[in-house]
Every structure is written in structure tokens, then in C-alpha cells.
Image (cartoon, rainbow over all chains, first blue to last red; front, side, top):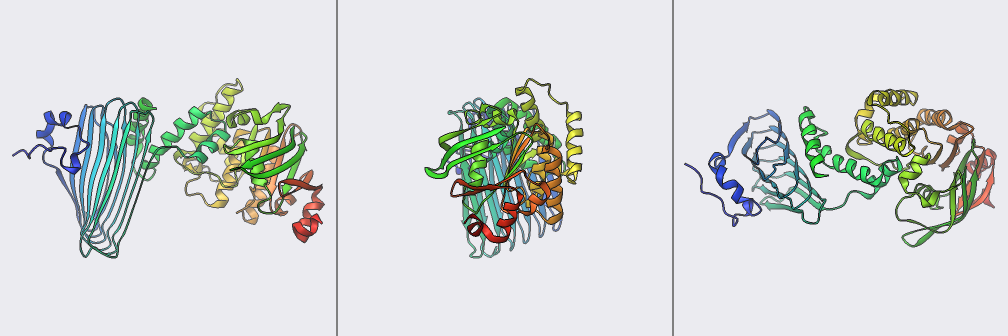
Length: 245
Length: 247
């Protein structure tokens, strides 16, 4: 049975390119389930594939004390969607490092729902977007802290760089908290490269255009600094940036 | 080599430098000492061209060229190096990539051939070794996770690799332990002590000067040079403080 086709009235689909999704919906209507057992660890790198429309829908369950670390690059030429629902049991640890790199008329989005159901879970989500032309890059991230999930520590950091006037970044962190002893931080910025970094690079001899290109590379590449096996995603991100900068 | 004439500068419309005049001939190292807020870092930033540091009067020439008319990267290509008081972190870019692109950008601007990756790595390793820094650190993102002392030492490695004609070093000694201070002092002498080079060394403390032995020492107070002398002046300041020594 194929699940009903989504509509834009659903919050998690409001920025989606539904016209592009329609022909492939059957393949993606059911999310893939991944379970990381108690005390186990998972580290994965999600690379783009050679298709105009790229959709990945995953439901991830982390057992007690389990750890998951995901690195993802979303850079579909037409529509890319990475959708993730994560459930954290007691003491589980979830880290997401994702980039949207978009050009022309593309739409790329990372949509997450992180549910802290046990005590002392920790989640970190870091998303960077670089967009030119009329590209759209979005992050919709909902963090739910269940009643009793005390000492939850959740963070969302979302930054976007728009290289052309026509590009659009949507950043929407959202919190729903039913416990009283939790730490939930979120920050979102759209805009400028760091002025001090630019001056530092220029003082070393880089002309302003090269300094900007280098810092944009760093803006994205910093996501993969902690990856054990990050060479492929580094190369793919560099390639994607070359078409955007 | 570097000639600063009646330099006035403001930051956010607040006057910080109020008529600095100073000449550093080729082959000399000059130290600038002064209390907090006297304008030492502002002088360094103005010389390197940091945006927001506005010159309202006076000027500066570097080897006869109008320094203040150049963009920061043009000053670097002309041979000026600023050692930052607070070196900046750049996540996602390795030191090797950062410095190779910087050096090659300077070389292009001077009409020289670019250095190949292999040649560059050789130079970088050699300079790291001379400053007793593990060359593996050059593979890490620029200054990310470096301690205060490591950042300062890395600034000197950068100076060794970029091989400037003139260095403005802004409190390169702060945050260094005694051993690191000696290594950095020796690095400054090795890289910059030459008949065609010059250094402006900004510091709070006399200790680094015992390693580097400046030819002249100047005291900057309230945005002006109030005294100049030899290293004895620095020793007096260390003993008596700025208020006493300036009196």
C-alpha cells in the first residue's frame, strides 16, 4: 500500500517540490527503518546520487546509550529531500552534519524530527546551506522532548549563505518540550561570511574573491572535520561547491 | 623601509591614534611597548588594512609606496606580514591548503611561478620543524582546537613559509610559556633578521625583547609615541611601569 501523497498544508512538506516528487513517490512513500541497539554505535555518510530527484526517508531508533552520527550532502539538481525521524532512548546520542548545496532552480531540504523519549539524551544538528541562482535550501527541524525525558541536551545550528538575490533559505527550528529540566539551544543565520576570517585570509595574500571562495569551502567542509571516513563526502562537496561559487 | 608619518586613525568614529610618527629602516627590529588601550593593536591593524580602521590624517609608506592605498592582499604581496594577537580559526580548511593558496596568490601577484604541492609541503614541514611544531598539525583546520600558545607558534610558522620583507607582530609573545617564548624569539631572528628586512614588534613585556634584541624601543601612550630609546628603555619600563618611566 502506498501512503497518501503529501500536501503543502503539512508543515513538514511546506517547502517541498511536490511536482518533482509525484512521479517517484511510490518508491519513497514508506521510510526506511534503522535500529541502533543499546550501547551500539553507527556512523554513516550519505552521498548524493546521479539522479534529478533524490529522496531519502529514514526512521532511526537509538536504544539506551546508543550513538549515531550522520554526515549528509544534499545537492540534487531538481529536488533533494533528506527526511529523518529519530527516537532517542535514555542516554542516547545523535549527531547530524548536513549540507544543502543548490544551484539554478533546485530545491534541497533536510527535514528532521528528533524525539527525546528517555532521560539524558543528547542531540546535535548542524546544517549549512550554500545557494545560488533561484535555488531553495531548507532545514525544518523539530525537537520533541517527552514528559520525563529530563536532562535532555539538544542543539540545532543552522546557517545559510545566499550567493544570488534570487536564492532562498528556509530555516525553521521548532521545539516541543514536556519536561522541565532540559537544555535546548538553536541558532539560525542567513548571510555574510565572517569579516574577521575574510581579513585574516586577505592579510595572508588571498585576493577578496579567492578568500570568499576559500571561506565558503570552509563553511561547508567544516561539517566533515569529525568524520572518520570523510574523503568521499569532502570530494563530493567540493565538486558541488565548484558549480555554485 | 616603513615610514609612518603623523598617523591619525579612528575606530567606530573614536580617535585611537593621534599622530604616530615612526621610521623603521631596513635591517632593523623596532619594538613598541605601551599600556592597554594605548593603540598598539590599532596601529598593527591600520598597517595591515583591516576594514573599519579609518585613517583620518597622516600616512604610511612601505619601501616608498603608499601603504594605505593598497588592499590588504596587495600589502601581503608587497611583503608585509601581520602576526595576529588573536589568530583566527577557519574550520574546514587545513593549514596546508590555506597557506599554499595564500603563498601562491602572493607569488602570482609578484609575477612568480606557483609552488607545486610537493615543493610547498617540503617548505611547510621544514618551517614547522624549525619552530618545533609537529607538522601533523598543518593537516588540521586553521587554528581550530589549537591552544593559545600553539596559535602563536603557528603564526610564526606562517611567517616562515610566507617569508615576508616586513613583519608587524602584535603581541606574539602573549600566551607563551618560557620555552615557547625562546623558540618564537629565535624564529623571529632566523626569519626576519636580514639586511633587507624589518620588524615592528608590539609587546607588553620585556622578556621577548631579551631574545630578539630590538634596535629601538618606542613607547606608545594615548595614541602617540612618547619616548624612544634602546633596550634599556624596555628594562626601565619593566622595572618601573609606564607611568614612572614616562615621567
